[in-house]
Image (cartoon, rainbow over all chains, first blue to last red; front, top):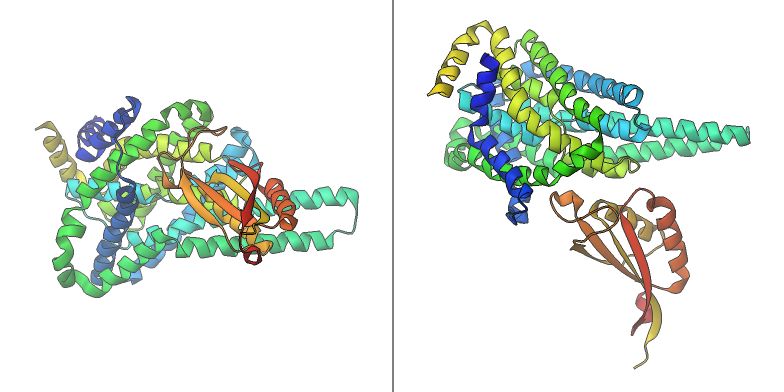
Amino acid sequence: MEILQLIQSNLLTPIILFFLFGIIAARIKSDLKIPEAISEFLPIYLLAAIGLHGGIEMRNTGFENMLIPMLVAIGLSLLFTLNHYQILRRLGKFNIFDSYALASTYGAVGAVTFSVGLSFLKNQGVSSEGYLAAILAVLEPVAFILAIFLTNMAVSKQIRAKKQSFTNDDSSDIDVGLNQTKTKLSQVLHESITGKAIVILLGSIVIGYIIGESGFDSIRIVFDEMFTGAIVIFMIEMGIIAGQRLDDIKKVGIFLIAFAVIMPTFNGIVGVLVATAMGLSLGGAVMFGLLLASASFIAAPAVLRHAIPQAKPSLYITSALGITFPYNIIVLLPIMFAISTLVHSEGTIDLFNYALKGLT
Amino acid sequence: MKLYNVKLLTITCEILAQKNIIEILKKHNISGYTTYEVEGNGARGLRGQGLQIEKNVKIEIIMREEKLSDVIEEISRTMFADFALVLYVCDVGVVRTEKF
């Protein structure tokens, strides 16, 4: 009952309402559109704000306690990516390229989802550990690198098998295949690390760490108080894009629709429980779960289109943006918050306050 | 004024394919090209709306005839199957043929 109430009151926050409004605007074929420059600017702004907060927090708390959560997050992300692949390939009967592309899309993290999560917690009056921003940056390329590596291995194995049936002298072909894999991986690694999302995120973390709380005062109005407002504007754009894709959802098939809802739920809840076991705070556990639950829909297509061009982008963009993103921010976020509150015994009071706020 | 005959290759493709095209051009020692972002409709549906990464781009390359078939061959072999892409060729006249 409490979860339902949480979802209900979450539905009535400006972020979700504007997202739904964007979907409606797209459905009635309105020409409403956020100017391109602004929708390109907003993710950069959101990442800068996340990074600054993270950096300031890390100055207060230090780096030492971030190492274990970070390694656990990387391990879980890799594990989940492999798990997704097996499910998609064996149960979903997707081809190897689509399976790996989808597996890594769901293993990767969504920065927009992360921003919405932060703002959700802010709304609840709960804080989270600052180093989660650093984990967000580190986690971004991990799932892609694994998926691309495995795809290339599988492809070169296929090539080798084919070649072997023609001739026995095939050592040179394997070398060529391996070298191609290596150059592709180093390219992806370089592109991910120098990509704008990670550069602005890491840059802001460093700057936040240097300036600290006192230096932040002069820019607080932009990077703190305007944060939720900026997300709201971005949510109109996200809603419009998701709304335009609603028709495509039928095309992705019932299996992928179910996958796009069940997998994040499973990953997210595991994330919350693991984070709690590691001693993260109530809010920190929610954000940790959200990191693992979220799917990437801005970074993923840009990376995957080059690395695994055979995979159909309509599958992984539509399922991540059209199904998982709305599900995560509307339904899963309150569920994870409720679970995190349950496992953090002292948090029951927060939940009670929240339920009261929702009623009034 | 004397005009020299060269070829103009025009490629309309999804924006994420642009880098692959330019790499192929580089491989054939072609450094000059012009790109612009475009919108349109085609076999892969209405393109140019929504996400920035789903935009289309038009690439124009002027080159000598000798290189043309190799470039087109490589583009069709490596990219037609996976990317939204059309290409066509026209004859154009240029003044300074040594540039191409």
